[in-house]
Length: 360
Picture (cartoon, rainbow, N blue to C red):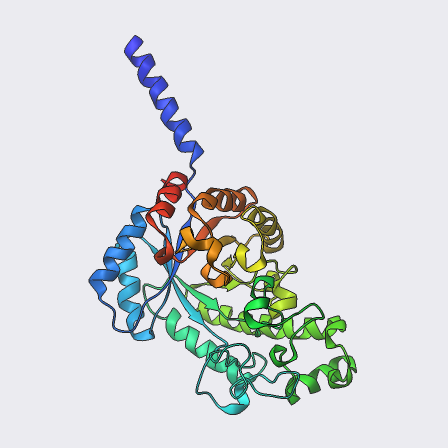
C-alpha cells in the first residue's frame, strides 16, 4: 500500500510538472536557397523539432517547395510556405505603386533597392499574386501559404530605424514612401468620397484615405484566402504589430479585418526601441484584435548578443538569451497561441538553453 501511495504521488508530481509547460506551438522563419542540400535541411528540421518546434515557415523557390515540405512532414513539422507578395522585380511598369511625388516604385524604390513595390489595388497585380500563391498552395505537403510583404511600403519607419536612414517621421509619412497615388487609386477615391487627395496638403489628416488603402490590401488578402481555401489549404500572414498601434499608420495593414487562419505579428521590440516587457502589451492588443484567429508572436533574435550594446542598427540587435523568458512568457500570458523565431539561425547555444527551459 505504501509503495502504491508513493507511485501515486510521483504520478501527481509528474502531471503537475507537465501542467507547468503546456504544449505551445513554436515556429521558426528561415530562407532556403535554390537547389538546397536536402539532407542538410533534414538535419536542420530534425534539430528544431528536438527543441520543441511545431512547424517551419520557409521562403524557398517554388521548384524546391515539394521536397522541403515533404521533409518537414516526415520530421513531424507543419509547413508554412513563406512568400513575399508585393515586393517583385521585373514586372510591367504600370503594375508598380506610385508615391506622393508621382514616382513609380520600380524606378524610385524607397529606402533600399529591393523595395520595388507593386500596387495591391491593380487588378493585374491581384491576378498575378493570386496565381502565384495558388501554385504554392497546390503543392501537396504545404499546410499554409504564409503571406509576407502583403502591404504598402513603410510610409513611416519603426522608431529604431530613423537614425539608420537619416529620417525623421515626427511630422508623418515620408512622401517618397507614401503610396499609392496612381491615377486609378486617386480617381476611385475621389469618386467614392468627393475628395481629390492630390489637392490635400496633409493626406494623413484624411482618415478615409488611410481606410481606402487598408481596404485595398484587405481585398487582395480576401482573394488570396478564397483561392487557397478552394485548394483545401490554409493562410497565415506576417504582419506589423498592432494593428492600430503600428500596422495601419505605417504600412496600411488593417489585418484584424483580413480572413486568416493564423497571424504572425512581427513583434520586434528593438525596432521600436522597446524592452522585452513590451511584448505583453502589444500582444494583448493583437489578441483582442484578432478575435478567433490564433496569434503567433514573432520574436527577433540577436545573433551577436554579447556585442549588442555596440550594435547601433536594430536589424542587428534583438533578444538576448536572458530576455527570451520575458518575451515568451509575456506573449503567452497576453493570450498568444504560440511563438515564432526570426530566425532559428540566429539562435546561439545560450539562446537554445533558455528556450529549452520554456518548451521542453
